[in-house]
Image 1 (spheres, one colour):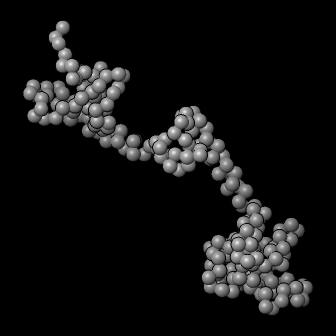
Image 2 (cartoon, rainbow, N blue to C red; image 1 turned 135 degrees about the horizontal axis):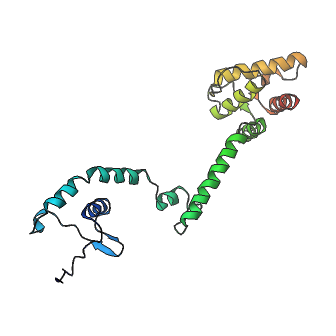
Image 3 (cartoon, rainbow, N blue to C red; image 1 turned 135 degrees about the vertical axis):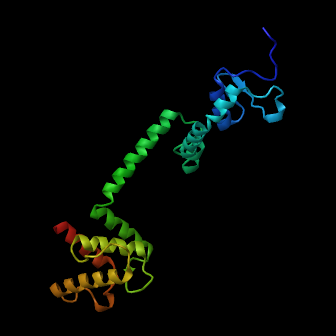
Length: 212
């Protein structure tokens, strides 16, 4: 048996496979065997015709593998998203289970977020953060709050447009709702409070949903 170069260990796979692996990873270890790729003039013997043909035929396979790698998500990428959910020591099985769990939570949230109580809860939080009310008479009213108000009023048929957070259309819907209630109970909303979504308006909206 001829003596082998101690600096190069021959890979135990075909030349075509070796080219693909090397193109993706550079010099890599596969099955305990180190593959060292040499360039052009460094190889005094040159490449055989068979090797050249296999090399030329690898381009599509290399591009396909590179495309797959570009679309993949590594453990380190998942850790960047949330180290508490995806730490570096997590097993593949645990990561897959965690992803399934998060998807289930997301789907449940989507379903619950359409319930009027969930919308009222979110609106209440925004009201508390804004001093207890949402004044839709001003042009810089919170757009998220406006969208929630539109959505809630749409559910009880006091708003018929798209819930887009537009302040003017929100104001028109709120004032229509308040004036309608005032026609049933005169003075329920003081004139100075028309166009302001406060505790009375909030409770009135909730009562409409509970009665429907």
